[in-house]
Structures are given as structure tokens and as C-alpha cells.
Length: 324
Image 1 (cartoon, rainbow, N blue to C red):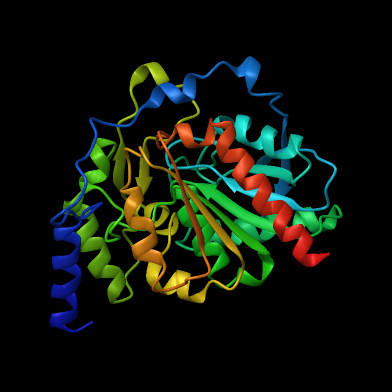
Image 2 (cartoon, one colour; image 1 turned 45 degrees about the vertical axis):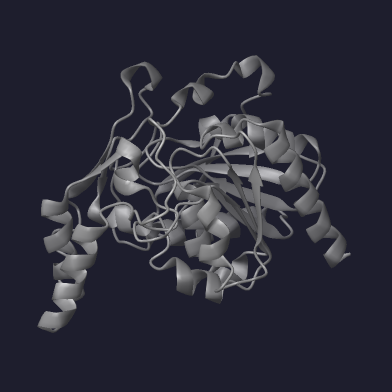
């Protein structure tokens, strides 16, 4: 890369570590409401046992399968620092309506069997792992596969559906998705939840721009999860390659390349992102994306509310009717 190109990388990274603010932006709330994660499990339905599949590198990766009377599979990807357990309530609601069988993977580098916690072997490995999961599900008789996710998991779902494996996705369900540090929806510094190490990110990004990958395993992003919400399954630091691979490289080109039907749901009271900016950020690049905001719903509360699952079920039913 030439010097102007390097300067652009440096300027963009320093200006927007995890979010950019501008005139007229909505004020940031005091922080993420993690109490939504502590909702009583007795109302969330059963938590299925973890099952395993083999990735292309031979790794044994895990997922939970919420069964339903439907040939459709919804792969629902968890957000940063956590694993699939907190998606239990939403997954049971969708599967209970027979809208789809829901599959919630524990991504490589996460959960109780992470391999190298907080790290992957190369930037695109999570996409390859999801493609291998789709292959595994189809070997078990799966029909159409919808790829979705919450928060950073929504960003990864977009990356997958608009990327090299996009032909494997028949639809895309985005729940308050992370669109990137430079997206209009981002809040400065992740609203205190995520702490990027710019002293590492900037030089590693510049090294990658000229083909040097030696430092991609260095930890560059840390998460401040309060101790009372920790379970031992959390992942509180990400390597450069995991941070980079866990979301779209550029949300504009990703939405422009997205051919599958897509529904985006977000809470109007989201503390992590600026929900009112989803529509103006996305519509110029893909006007077909259906975007809905739910009044009074927070970032983590989105996957705990029955209203969210009901919206998703209606959309999944509509997709089924189109095919039939």
C-alpha cells in the first residue's frame, strides 16, 4: 500500500475505534443492561444439549438444536464475548411456533470448548465454519437454511450471507446487528462495553494492508463484562483476526451484495447501537431489507422479548409461503 493509503487506514482507525459520533446523534445511555441475561430460565424453555460437527480443519465444533416441525433451519449466531446459551428463549419461541428448527452454534474461540479462546486461525475461518455447519445440517436432511445472528453475530450473518458462501443462505435475520466501527449506527467506543487497543490495531491493520499476517494472533479487543454476569463460558479478549472476522468488512458493499431476503429487528431503546440510523444507513444500498424497531426494547432485551420472536416467526412464515 502507498503512503496515502496507509495514512487513510491510520486516520480512519484513530477517528472511529469502535464507533463514530456526529452532529445530531442520539445520546448514549449509561451502558448495556446485562440484567436481561438473568431472566428466569424456567420461562425460557428447555436448553438442548450441545451436539458436535467437524469443520474442514478437523476441529470438533458445537451447537444446540431446537427441534420443530419444519424442514427449515435457522442458524442463529451469538454476539461478542458470550456463547449460544443466552439465545435459548428466542430459539425456543421460534421453534415452538414451528417456523424453523433453530441451530445455535458456539463459535470457534468461544463457549465451554473454545479451542484457543478468543482466537481463530485466519480471518475468514468463522465463515468457513458456518459453511461446514450448513453442510452438516444438510447431511441430516435440512431444507432451506436461514442465517441470522444477534449483535456481532448479526454482523457475521451479514458477512456470511453476502460473502463467498452466500449461496448457502436462503435468508438473513439480523437482530440489532453490528455493522462496523465506521457505521452510522455505532456508538463511540462501544458505549464502554468494548475496549480496543489502538496501539496494536493500527500497526497490525497497516501490516495486513501490505500482506504481513504475523501479528494477527495478538489480543486487540477486550470486553468489560461485570463479574456478576460471568459464567466461565465468556470470552473477554479477541485477537485481531477474530475481531476482524466477526463482522462485515464493509456494511455498504455487504448489503449491496446481499441477494437473500433479509429482516432486521432492533430495539428502539438499544444502548449499544443507534437504532434510528439502521434504515438510512442500509436502504441506499439495499432497499429490500425489511427494518423494524421495537419500542422500549434494549440491546440484550431484544432476544428476550416475545414480540421479537413473533416478528421473526411471521417473516419466516412469509418466506415459506413464497417458496410454496
